[in-house]
Image (cartoon, rainbow, N blue to C red; front, side, top):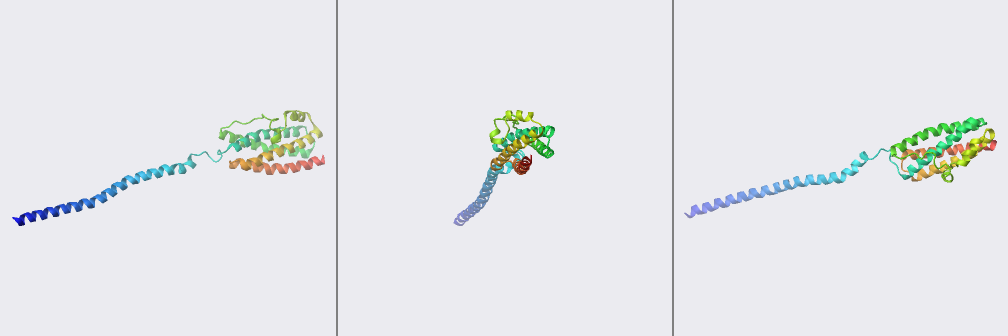
Amino acid sequence: MKRTVIAGISAAVLLLAACGSSNHNAHPGSSSSSSAAVARPSMSGMDMGSGTPGSAAPKLSISGAAAHNAADVTFVQMMTPHHSQAIDMANKEVIDGSNAQVKALAKKIMAAQSPEINQMNGWMKAWGIAPAGHQGNGSMGSMSGMMSDADMATFQKAKGAQLDRMFLEMMITHHEGAVTMGKTELVSGSNTEAKALAQSIITGQTKEIATMQQLLAGL
């Protein structure tokens, strides 16, 4: 009888031990597996959340041609009417001037600045801003070298040698204003294409200023 009880107790102990061992082995594995299964998507989600804005920003941002700051806008809005006035002056010289070299320079100015106006108009359209037009011919004069309405009225009445001289004198001032505006854009602008145009204007118009000074001295 005792043997039977002892045997039964031993069997029960062994059974409990086996079950306990089985449950203990299963718990860490299932708990770890379950924990990992929960943590991994959660961490993945956090990584996606923190990483997505950084990685997606370049794809969602506007193109390099359209990326700009306030200085770029000011540069383009001012330089466009500035160029337009230069073309008006150059066209007048081509029609009514008398010096062949001055007239040739006027044609060169028109050929250089007309495409630049088209380029800047394209940027303004891409940036969603309105062109400045011809407004401010007088108001921007002191800062940009723009001629006032009175200056332009006097200029339009001139012809021949008088016009040649006036054209050179006024265009030197006009170019100096453009160079100043270009230097401001290089310092404060952010758009790479606008800054490249600014540098081109500085380089080209600085050379033209020297040419005009020589021509003026020879009149």
